[in-house]
Image 1 (cartoon, helix red, strand yellow):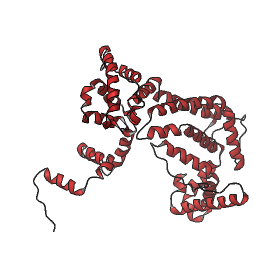
Image 2 (cartoon, one colour):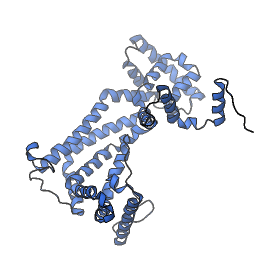
Image 3 (cartoon, one colour):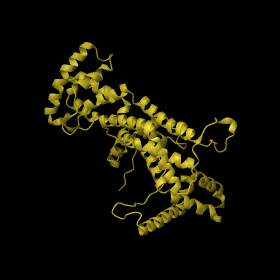
Image 4 (cartoon, one colour):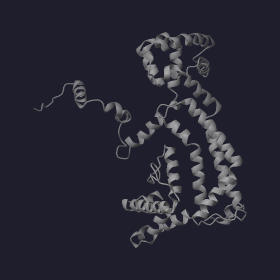
Length: 381
């Protein structure tokens, strides 16, 4: 759909004009209200592979602009100048006007909507681990409620949408016959059984199990314990018990005697850093570790610093690892596929840390390059 509707500026303009005409008509009939921030222009932006929030917005816009998209596709399907695209356009209109498309689109909207806040929280550069883990628990409970008691309301919402746009709603107790498949290759079942058991419950169970696998009790407890080291707001989240529990996850690094020493050291450490003005304004674990090294306190509180280093090496602490892999796809493309590992590493560093490198002047770069060895340079007057 995005390839067909968004393939050219002309089709974008058609989408915008049709939507503007429909909004004007709805305002004249009093179906919608006008005001600041209402009835904003919508587009069909292509969702990003690693940004689930963009998938949610795309599905939301498709449902909100359903009548507009359908009218544009029908107009294109009747335009002789678009004859080359007619097969794809006609197939898309047929799909768009099917009950299956409406059902799946609404189910995707619910699933992505329930996890939208969690996705945004996990994508932040500076994460609040406690709130993120709380959102995991909220998402699991909401999915369980949706599975147990949400089917009737969800199906009614899908039927109302279909009736509004004159889409045929099949009899839920009739036999299910999938399009394009022989009856020999699918089980005998009703439409209600297919959509309720295989699609609705099947997808919810799969998403719930994925959350369980990625955020089990041990992982959640580990992340929550990590949050006790957070230095923001004058170490307000500091909790010695959670830090000690975090240390118990690494028995090879912390013996029983080391744990007792750590317990005593934590009390002295927190009193020291809270009274030291140099530790004010810290926002994350990375800044805390740098400050401990700058002030030589990493030598005084060796066990605390060890816990901090163990927390920093966990890639789940931030979304930075995911951003590195996304950057890798941009830097090492088909044109630059044969570059050496050293050159690739240098390119990645300058691309990922471009905010820092943008502050470096070109003259400093030239002087650093010239200082590596004696070179002949032409002086321009």
